[in-house]
Image (cartoon, rainbow, N blue to C red; front, side, top):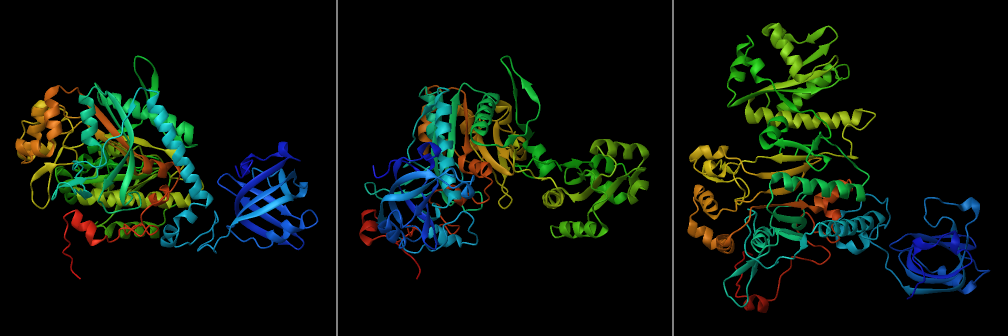
Length: 613
């Protein structure tokens, strides 16, 4: 070994020992006669002192060292002078005085950017081009350490509970995730293609047929989708699981136990809990839970941020009884319209008239005609519309919204999608304002608000073609699978599936379902969207055949590992979670890909390009 210790290992117990360290020159300070160098490696920093009175040859060599040079030093550890103590460094008790040997292992060009934890305004494309240098920055290096801890914890946790870690194929067929596939041409079978898996969906269900009742893997997935802040270009990783002989609550128990244990082990964040739920064995805390319909009506999203409330409260029935014909006519049409209230507790005295006008301007840019509001004063509601409501209706309004003195309530009324959309955007706008104004954080990054979203619709209608299709996953079990699949036409839009997502702090971090394991009802579901049994056989032939050899009831889930890491690390850009990410333009700037290939390679694959100049 070229070194006897890593940087973090040296403490006061090593004083007067001879040690050898290797690493990079992080910082060089010339104090006249004495040269100080901070030697850095993956673990930490150690201060090295070059004094010509101790070793002039080493001092002369150190005078040539520059940032990022790789060096090897042999020296004796000594106590750091008391006035130079730096408790922020793990090695703060000691320093190194070179009295043996120093060796230059390799020189470095001047880096294209400052390799410093606090360096700002570095162009991201430059960072990605020199990613191996970017990863030297403590922040990103710590992200890689965290990722390693997370994958190790995951494997150990599931293995301890009898899950089998099984790797499924990368070269596979098209997976029914409804994103674009990455296709891989076959050299030996001209004109045919493999597809990189969007998820191990079919393979893990086939494992259930094969008596593997508990499967998991940290699975690479590939989807040709446009990148965004929380979605990496091309590939991502998910904690993928499937279990036999389970119901929805069994899945929820496994997920909740795993995430609670992982959070305790890897993070200081606090999980916000709802109410205790008892089973026969123990009492445990469950996450928040909303149906898809509830989530959309309250928050107009299936991934609500529940670290704060600000939910939209339905008051259409109360407005329908008002004597104001405009409001009552809107409110009575509950199929097409909505009247929603949004309460901000205790902020009546803080919102000025100017702010109220700015709030109305804000919602108008999203199609709102106006934004109403009323205030709860010490003597009762202050509201120009009081005269249009009976005392009983006003009291019901106060009770339903849980109004207290100094609360302010905003409300919107009109067509359903329009109202829900602008009130949802207004909710987010209010939250950001409150987060900025309050002394304490309104949106607490130290809180995790996990929320199950259940009862998703299985079918949807395309707004352009008006055809019925699967809303998301065709393999989800309908909640009432025998009766539901007897429905036709628009009645199919009412069919709910045993499909669930898990949201956390504004991100969807888990998806999947209890599977439809009955081959006849599975074929029937496909027929409802105009796909024949022959098409099911052709596209999902392995599953079609396997399900005829007895398949157990089963279900599973996939946790977006990268998004979960973003939440744990308070990171807004998913690209920094990866060791070697692609840019938002879908390019690996470091490896210069995608790139053209030789004509000979294309001929071997029986591919001829027809590109416009």
